[in-house]
View 1 (spheres, rainbow, N blue to C red):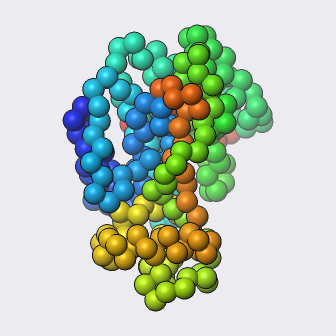
View 2: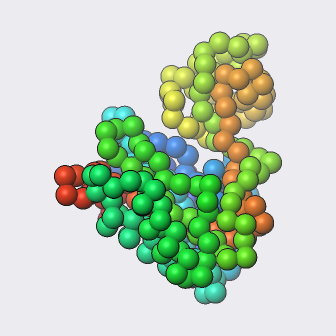
Length: 253
């Protein structure tokens, strides 16, 4: 699905539809992170962004079924000199999974990830980490790698296309109230994309409502995260369930 020239919007729409076709729902909008974009980019309505030649393309997506959530990602590389970034992220993920068991400190998992990436002469992203999924002992492990010359940290970009419901009151216009009610009913506390509102509202109506809802803190935005020095980033991720003797990969093929 991910090839140079393919629209990011097509990848987002098709992958999200595949989840629905198989009885699930997106746990959050599909992320398409190109080169220095590490996280939180999903296509806005009418997006014309395409996968460029010679890039790293990260596809990060989650599925929820009956409220249970998993999260996974893959990096597709179209530039041979950047392939070690992908290899390092994949190996770091594998090593972390093998080390993941009851009683192990998360700081030790972090050391495993860091040492694996540094073995390649590369740098981990220090302020992006895995996270617990609130379903008992279920964790998403997601190493991010970048070049040694990079800052190894992400910062907020100037754009945001993913949002989250916060509170039911504060909207000032009737359109904003209708959009907020739709968000609360359809997405609850899970992140959603601005383009998902197109099915129910005219684009300009939704756009103005989102602005109003953010202003009055009814919803919050997830800024696009970019590597601080503009260097490319690779990512690899699985969700695991902790067992008595280790862990089970929930997102493995």
